[in-house]
Image (cartoon, rainbow, N blue to C red; front, side, top):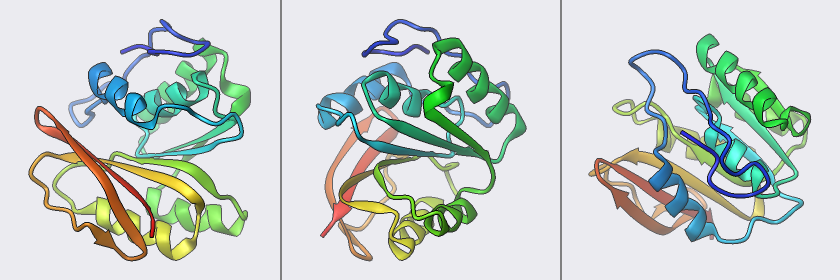
Amino acid sequence: MRVIAGDKKGFRLKGPKGKDTRPTEDRIKESLFNILRYIDKDSMVLDLFAGSGSIGIEFLSRGAKRAFFVDRSYESIRCIKENLEHTGLKDRAEVIKSDAIKTVSMLKSKKLKFNYIFIDPPYGYDLGVEVLEKIWGNSILEEKGIIILEHEKGLNLEDNIYGLIKMDSRSYGHKSLSFYAKK
C-alpha cells in the first residue's frame, strides 16, 4: 500500500494487523481519484472507518487542507498515526478513536462540514446506508460535497437516499464505489 500521487507520492503505508481489515487496493484508490480529478486546496475530508488512513492521506497528499480520520479500533488508530507521522502529514490531520455514527453528530456540534466523505464500513452490516442517513441528518456535507461509499459488489443501493442522489457507481472485482451528492 502506498501514496499514489501528490507531494507524498511513493510513500509506503502500513496496514492495521488483523483479519478484519480490507485496505482499499491501490488500483481502486487510483480509479477513485481519477473519477474525482482535481482536489481543491481548501477541501475538508472525513475518512470514516479509516483503517490504515490511506484514503485520507491520499487526499492530503493531493492538496486537501485537512482530514479527519475516524475508526474505533486501537490497532487502526495506531496505524493511522504512524502513517501520518511517516508521511509528515500529522499537522493537517485529526485522528478520532470512536464509533463512526456517533462521531458524525459530534462533528456537527463543532460546526464542521466536509467536501469529501469516504465511508468504508465493515461488509455485511448495512452500516453504509445508516451512515449516509446520519450524514444527511446532521448536515456535515458541504453543498457541493461528495460522499464515496465503498461496499461489497452486489449490494443494491438506492439511487436516492434521503436528500442524496447517486451520481456514479463503479465495480472493481468484489468491491464497488458509489458516489453520492446532495440533490
